[in-house]
Image 1 (cartoon, rainbow, N blue to C red):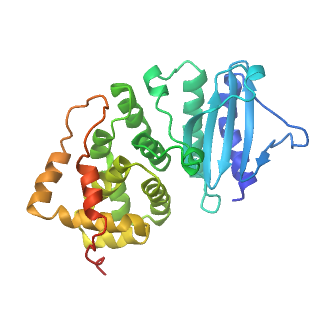
Image 2: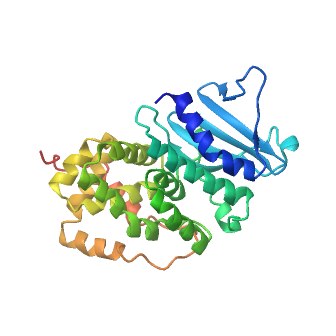
Image 3: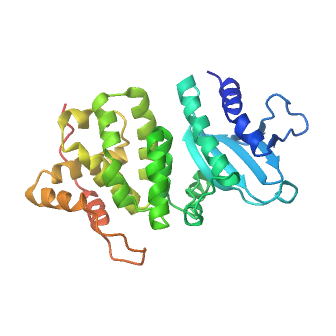
Length: 301
């Protein structure tokens, strides 16, 4: 499926929701009225506007993002857009089912941002970190971004993700991933190549460009659930980046020791949520430091 065909199907799938909220496409000079795509450097986008604000759907580096601003359309030029949902949009592997899933994701966002199903104010503050911010060196990916990106691969996680935001007013990663890491382990067990590629593209990117907490959530809470299983590790090896593979192997081996088994049991019962404050390095950071410079055993063959 080529990009234009995929985008046309996506727009067709969200058009009723856009129309219901009063949005119509912006057609710049020289752009096609059927698909008014604007190209800027390495990205393409299509924009919609109404009295409620603007929506921009941006495609860059196989990532599709829904951006929005609730400033009136005639006043929105030059203002920063907020980031809504983001999802992988790899046209060489896309099918109708995946496009429908993206449509559902974007339709939900549009209704929440501009319709009757308003987001909780506390949840609106939890905007995922953008690739542009990471590339500029201004920010690192955080736990909220990791969860948000994974909902693109696992749409069933979207509601639990929102519930977590609404419950705590900010994203509480320890609880969320203890409860839902199993979906990734099940994907590894099934050896679902297409989904594995998508999931590990997310995990590799977020691990390499994320905070120490994000690295810990990926290597310890999520992939530590492989329990040092040789078959699971061998499957994961095909998709893990070199940078991530070493600590993942190290942590899986550590969890087989007596001390590791005790610690893993503690991690399955995360402490009650407390608002973030400056703190000393926790278990995640300690494990990342311990694995750095180590030579974990070779991957089972």
